[in-house]
Length: 423
Image (tube, rainbow, N blue to C red; front, side, top):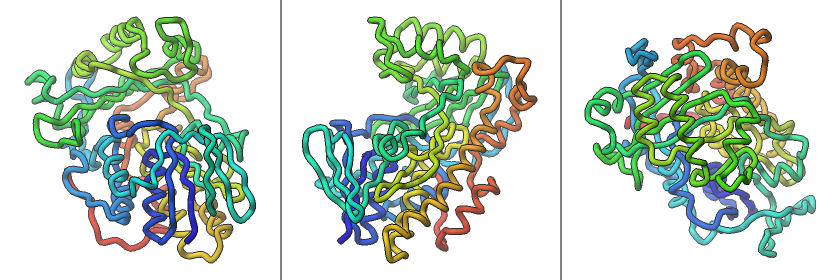
């Protein structure tokens, strides 16, 4: 039985490991964090293609997978509705998907607190070495270890994340904490606000323990805000004066930074959006990056998900791309006689898909990145202005509505009669 060593126990790693086991491979997952990840993450959008992959694993996709908003509703700075459009996608939470994938995987094959140091490629096999001194051997090593991938650093050190010039403030408000009038107005809708140079989206997601009962859900927000590299470094500096690079744990964010964020929001966003931010107990932020890798594999080491490509979140494609990577890799390994041939097919198909996802995400987020990285006189028309109708149509669009992406998915997909559940 061939064996895969999956580095990274988040969604991408679990998708790959579960799929490989479904075709008769042995797969073990090695996660650097020492505890369960289910409480981490925030809201995410789903795509029908992601749900199809979960079904292939054997996970039941029902109404509990997420929530289906009645509309996408755009508010102006005066608090009035500017536009309202259908919102066809199901919106879920990172924890909801993680729990389903983790429960489907054998607990004995999932190893916490295993930080990869390096690996040795022997040609027909690979040996991984971990920080605690242990090793593991397999036929294939899968780097599903995210944007700061140790696997990618070893095989493709030239591929580095590039800061896009803005951050995303994020957080969740328990449904029960929303004032009744605000709840009636926004909870059933995907609320968005698109003033020049800003972009915010907020929507309902499953609550603690993946609860989708009325009154037990949560309202998730993401606010994209232009931020210079210098200001990002200041945001990532804790109260003791230590700078944590380009990311910082939520609990270490200085109170002054959160107060400044709220003050900025009151000037930049619709009052409904501001109220959601003010109700958030622990807002946090993430810097937005672009990452493109020149290859999807080298030798017996292969990259998957965010270890290979990281696209700006406007396309809502992060988890779906990881699922399609895992699906394509599994199909190639199942249908071809050699691992080497399978990896080459995987590279040809998913590298093109990743490149197109990156290009689309840059296109949708161009007006945000330019604000902190380029002088105004050099802005293109697309960078200078944003049309709310453009953002409503293009941000988080369904794969089936993106011709340059869906043609690649349909070219290699298997027939399916299933339809996504409606939340």
